[in-house]
Length: 202
Image (tube, rainbow, N blue to C red; front, top):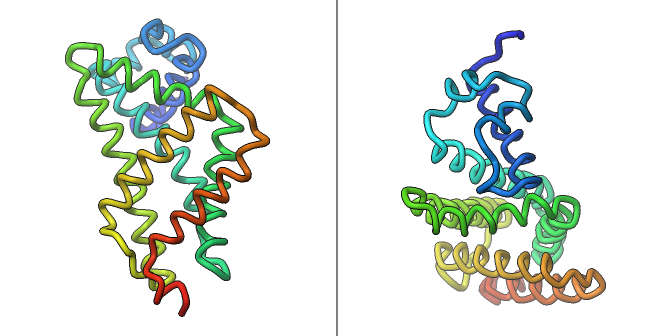
């Protein structure tokens, strides 16, 4: 087997863990099954991750990065703020529709971390990552579009994280794709409204 840099090997194992956990469930996924999924020996796994907590944290971080990356790519400034915000939300929802198993896994990871002794901090870490991701996206828009927010950025970031979390779970449970265009339009209008009126009129 060709040698691979440690960071790249960790990414390989993390992606394998995501596939295995999405298929088999977090509790039933073992280090052995992850190594098999990645096509490496168990010793390689233990070289890259010294604990299951470290693996779960890597999985949480990577799943968040998957969603944030597609939103960042879509969130370039457009003619209006509403169009820009809509593009970001549309990119996220396209990801949810294309990869529902990844988004279902995020909820399972939360429940697993809250119930498993010694893993509780990872649930908090997961939601801190969501807030930090939104804070970064908000900061990027503020700088590129010269925006003035009507609420503190930290409050808006946590609000967006909570709202997206709830809407995603609602979609995964109920489906009903026909309703989501109107829902996204409502969310977009609401979020754009949290920018000061004077700035939006400029």
